Image 1 (cartoon, rainbow, N blue to C red):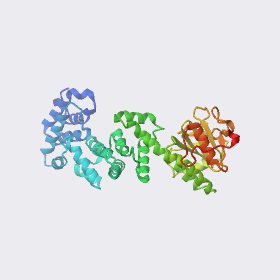
Image 2 (image 1 turned 180 degrees about the vertical axis):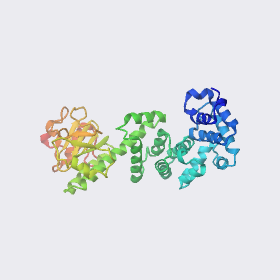
Image 3 (image 1 turned 180 degrees about the horizontal axis):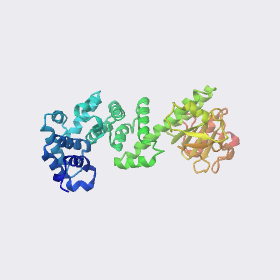
Image 4 (image 1 turned 60 degrees about the vertical axis):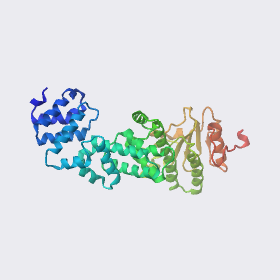
Length: 401
């Protein structure tokens, strides 16, 4: 195929669409040359748009496209001449950096994009993506207050303006600053909600998160998904107690339960948490938790207004029930042990009285009677080796030994 023989319409189509098709590589150089030689405003616009939209830095004809776009922008009396100079659009190294700096230092990101000619569909295109990737790098390398400032801006640019960024780079930019020092609660909650909404719960979409880790090719990649999972565990436990305490008729009892389990949470002893609602309880919870971030309790065996918090502590699986229900304990390898992050749980299974192999049957369901904290702590330490920050290893009545 000879690009010189194409109609102007077909040449515009080829210039605009060849950059993502490897089959077109042999004709890319001749296509760019033919478009530039036509000296037509419509093809000049197509050249610079193709450069900004695809920004194909790895393509063999990229440098030719860049030079053609620069020539096209400068040989007409139109906004692209000034835009190219001011925003360094035709410099693939400093251009994205220039735009990134403006996006992080000016409140009105939409105005910046309009001024650079990168609004509309070009806001989700290659050049703008390269600029946002630079914002991700800056955010990931920042510390404390600056990390939050850049993270807030990054979320705003993606959420409100619809800018695109490589997903692995975006996750790294938002989470990397907090691997050793967690952010304040309100910002942690915003980060958690944003990342789960865009990429899903790491425990619910493990394949997607593993793929992101591979894309990062960074030594901390695995720690990032674990960090988010840890935050989600914290959120699940706190939300459960907040929701139940709002409807309980025994706030003193719930304060004691919340204090007990929160101590394990703050000591990072809870490896995972997920809650499930009965049908009536689910109606009360809607609006207080994100859609899909909980399971439903079905079948007979539980009041539809009741809920359960399912936790993993080492090799133990625990179902802490709302209202006056006893907590249930299983060893993880027990076939009856509930799995975390399921969409549906059968009530009769969550209320099973037999803890199965590895547990003394009469201890599998522990009631919240006087001194229950010490008994629970003893049970957890005995089977997981994890101490409670207040109750330590706990203790059991002599009849248990």
